[in-house]
Image (cartoon, rainbow, N blue to C red; front, side, top):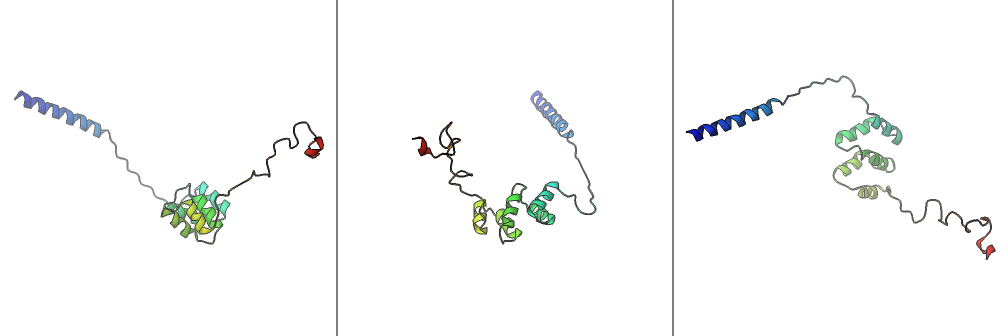
Amino acid sequence: MKAKSRIAATIAVLLLVAFAMTSNAQTRVSFRLELGSPPMNRYYVSLSEDYDVPYHDIRVLHEAGVIDEDIPVILYIYTHSHYSLRQIYSLRLRGATWENLSNWCGVPLYREHYRPPYGKAHGYYRNGPGRNRHESPRAHR
């Protein structure tokens, strides 16, 4: 009998502790009513201005499920190809990589440089330090 009462007491204490933990949880209920058009996102407005695409088209991209980091690249491909915006973002949402999209649309995203950006790299002094840089290197030999 004592064992049953100890088990019952232990169960009662555990139930009280569990109830106390769940009683601290508060339910939040909110209600929001918006009249008119939704507020404009400044990031989307700047993208709209940079790529000369209507703001509404960028909102459609966001509502379709495109993440914000992908939107500039999709807009770049859109402005440099003849495909529609919907075709491009639907391919991206289906799992196409950026390389696939750029190849399909004919828009290179990456440029391979086989040389430095401003010509050949001869170093700071073309003819050696302290020498006249306007003369040819053979004049000092």
